[in-house]
Amino acid sequence: MVNDKSKPNAGKLVVYGGSFDPVTIGHLDIIHRAVSLFDRVVVAIGQHPTRQPFFSVEERLALLRGVTADLPSVEVTSFEGLLVDFCLQRKADAIVRGLRAVTDFENELQIAHANADLEPCIDTIFLPTRTNYGFISASLVREIASHGGDVSRYAPPLVCEALARKYASR
Image 1 (spheres, rainbow, N blue to C red):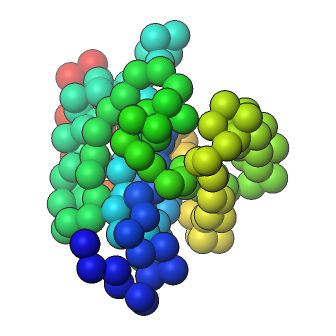
Image 2 (cartoon, rainbow, N blue to C red):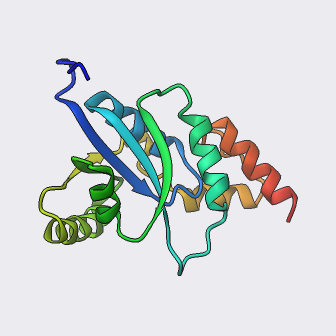
């Protein structure tokens, strides 16, 4: 692999884990920014046995792959268990997390500390959201869509279409 000196982390692999239920433009912003910093970005959908997602893992994988198809350095996959264990399996150098507000930071910092305790060689990098995306969450997008509202400002067209189909079938 040829190192691209324009990237501060040339040759490095970062994992962006989350539920992405559904992927929003805020998530996409973090993905695009991670691509600009790292050579390879793995977007990993966590499967939690205690949570009931709106979209199935297969649907979320398809949506994420669709909206990142123009990013050749992005791989979309899923995992079960601890994110830090997944990172070890993939030989990741770091975890990237987006932060919307101070309340996100407190929770994310606690998780980052636990991950560092479990595996000190994997760092967590926090990327604050752009101010115009700070209020967008997957749950907000689902709530607006459930009432027939326009979510095109908050989610990519592919996701908007999937939400419309899903709510129409209910």
